[in-house]
Length: 99
Image (cartoon, rainbow, N blue to C red; front, side, top):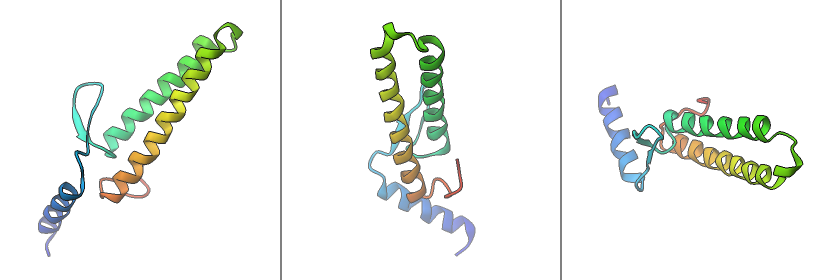
């Protein structure tokens, strides 16, 4: 099978397997769950929240509950990123060494 035919078959298999595997990014674009752009968006969110937690709240004891809540949100986003990366590898949107 030539490369074009193989790519078409991969695309059709990906569409058949995915169950609404679309994600809307912050800029409004819709991309596949587990794609590089999706993972980059999750990385951006994680970095922004982590920066906010460290630099704005810092070690201020008055905001310890808020700091904990932000830390839990970052943990959840990291978990979502791991799941999205596995989904992307499984559906051949990513190579195992990507990101």
